[in-house]
Length: 292
Image (cartoon, rainbow, N blue to C red; front, side):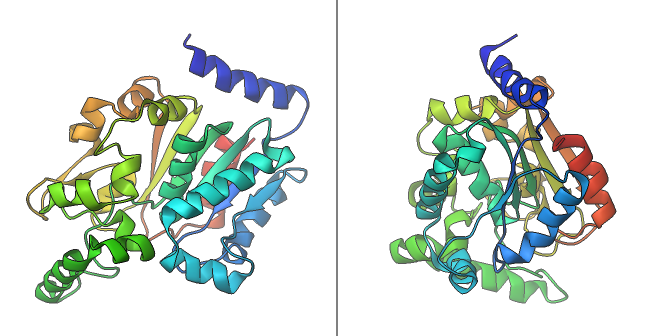
């Protein structure tokens, strides 16, 4: 058994031997707040009454939390959260990390960069290979949608926009792969598009489970397969590649292939729109399987 697997199992055994459930950290998505996902924390504590839950708020109040989900550098957010989680004594012996929509790839960045004792990482509708499209598009007028995303792509990689518009930092234009690799200050880094950083892979491989939830009728994430590391075939924006056929997977530069071969990479599918699921599904599929 590899050392990374022993490490994760050791942490889990210590906590369960002590009769305590692992704490849970939650990171909300775009246009939401820590208060907005409190109902999920309540669902978790309803099943595991003594569990410690921590919902990430970026800013000193919920209004700033909302604004920062659009306009604060993701790299700064990740650094802030790393420091905050590292300082929390209740998380020192290990925790599970749930990320919703963009909060999922931000949570993954925390795992990769910060060497924290995360046991299970669970992402819901997260844009792991970025997005190339506007929410709720394409609709009935595909021509309008194509024009709009070309306009977004024109500005997305400008320095000022990259630094200050959150969604530009995971904008992935498949027709401008070289520009994306050079100019993306967040996604291209955590996916090791410019430089392979071994610590990113090492830290992901410490996970006991990396769980990804894909929403089949998602009208926000384009392409939908980005939620499970799929992407558009480079050079165009209609055909997609599943995770296993991407260069990111085949090169194993962040450890996806190894995790999959070890049975640690888990996919769940929900027949619904973006991050839309029932309380019953969340309890049965997530809480009972991964949080106890």
